[in-house]
Image 1 (tube, rainbow, N blue to C red):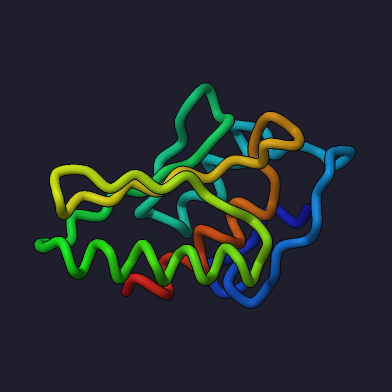
Image 2 (tube, rainbow, N blue to C red):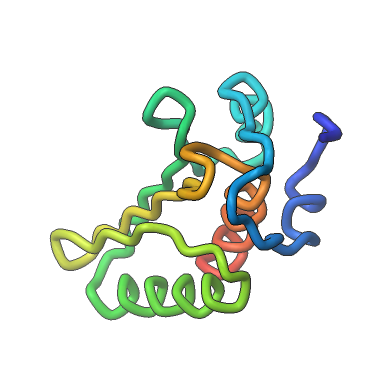
Length: 117
C-alpha cells in the first residue's frame, strides 16, 4: 500500500469485502496512518484502533452512534460501539477476519470522523 495516504485519500475510499486472505496493516504502518487520523489511538499491540467521543449529552451520543451504525451498514464494516456514562461513546475498529487491522479500518475511521464532526 502507498504509505503516503492522507485523510482525504482514506475518506474517498470505500471498504472492500474481507473474509480473510488480505494482509494485516503492521503496527508501524498503522502509526504512520494515524498521523492523519489524529483522533484515533492504536491499541491491543497494533491490532485495533479506537476513538473516544465525549458528546456532552445522551441524545448527541445516540445520534453519533446511529450515524456510525448507518455508515457501517453501508460500508459492511462494523465497529464495536460502547456507550457509557450516558454521553461517552467509544468506537473500536479491527478486522475480525484477519485478527488485526486492515485498510478498511482506516477507511472507516476517516468516514466516522466525517459523520461525527
